[in-house]
Image (cartoon, rainbow, N blue to C red; front, side):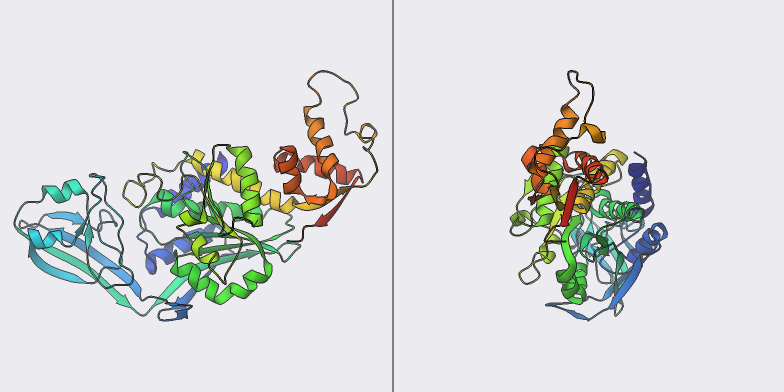
Length: 429
């Protein structure tokens, strides 16, 4: 649970920071992550830069936002909850009656106690968010609406870290940092990705690994506009990490054709970790897997969640607070991704080097005393040997014999040490 606690503590530190697509909150958040992985490079792209069919937006800065009643009481205040002002709101300073105030207010009608998360990135407007109960309690009278904000030519920030391995073939970990105070939807992905890179730095890596932390949608589009050819040449699998901090479910979102190495390894690991895991079609996509799988981009990137975005009641509301995530939930996601990575590291074609079954006993790989119940582990080894014919990769063998990849790795290492096993890289590697 040590990793889970570390990730939770990092999320707590990041939680209060006001973030949007651009701005100081994103930069502050990325700097805190860089403290944990100093090799992280924080990049910037100027506003108005053309990125495929999109344009990098202006930078947004907000210093204050509130609504006051006739007595000067602040009924909502951005300083108290940064969800109270609609993201990218234009400057505002007006006195209005209650009926006109309603036109500026967004609520979540089906959840009367929560503040919704609402943005207007690409159409200029101003607005506020509050609970339905608060809106319904407002009395007729004059209200003072104030938003002190500005849009200006600035930059969009994203972060990248590349860890080279023996092979240039690489695995992509992508996550986003652009939402204000929401724990599972916003922060669980970056803290998981950060911990994974800390761990990967300690490995003797066969593969190379790339972490990308972007503002969702426009960030991945911007990154792809600069790096698509490189990714096409080198990437063998990628994973968008989103909503990975709760402890309710495990979920995966397929790639567009559901036939990539990323799909194969995620299905293999999750079916052994949680046979009840939820598998979603690409038609149910919602995060940056949309961009990585777009026609012409066609990168092998699937999505990994605990409970999928949009499928839990706190999603995109103030209720997605630190109580939704937990060290246990984060630890579970971390354990899954460690298994996924180790499966990819070992995913080669294996061929046993002798005809018929090898004499395992003389190599210390077979028990010399026979008794009931001792052969379960040996059966995993001999079943692996039976299908190590050079025609199946490790994931295929795992699927065939019904054993988790991580329980075969020890046997692979022992067989290699004993000189009984040849290996070849998969065609992907």
